[in-house]
Image (cartoon, rainbow, N blue to C red; front, side, top):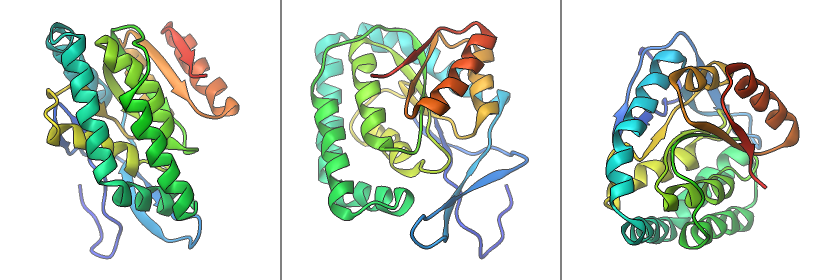
Length: 231
C-alpha cells in the first residue's frame, strides 16, 4: 500500500492474532464530525481479505470451544479489565470518530466493559458481526460477548465511519492472552459483507440502525446466510 506522506494513517486488518496488511483499490477516510479532519483511513476489502479472516476464525474454533466455559469467561474478564484500564484511550477514539462528548464516550466504554463481564452465552459457530457507527464499541461488546462466551469465533466488520475503537478492542485480545484467530477485524463496506457471506460464515449478526440493518440483511438473504439483528 502506498500513502501520501501527509495523508492519514491506515488502520490494518486484524487477522489470526496480528495486524494484516493488504493491497486494495480504495480506502475510506474516517472524518471527524466536529472538525471535518481526516483522522485515519481504512482499506475497503473484498473477497480475498474476507476469506482470510473467515479461515482464521474457523481454524481457531476447535481450540476455543475446547477451552471450556470457565476459561472463555476468564479471558472475557481479562479483556474487560484491559479495556477498563485504557478507558481514556478508547474514549478519545470514540470522541474523535463519533463526535460525542468525553462523558458520553467514557459512558460507552463503561457499557462495553460491563457487557464483556456479564451476560449469558449465546450459540457457537463462526459468526460475522457487522456494527454501525452509532455507539460502536458498546454495541460490538454487547453483541460479541455472548457469542464468545458460548465458544463462537468472530470476524467483525466495524463501520468505516467509526472503526478505531472496535479494532483496538480486538487488538487488545492479544495483550490479554487470547488465542489467535478467535476475534478478527475486516474493514470495508458492502463488498466486505458479500465476501464474508461467500467465505462461508455460519451466520451474520448486525448491531445498529434499522435502515442499515435492512441493507445488511438483504445481502445475507441473497447469499443464503442466516441473519440476526441484535436487540
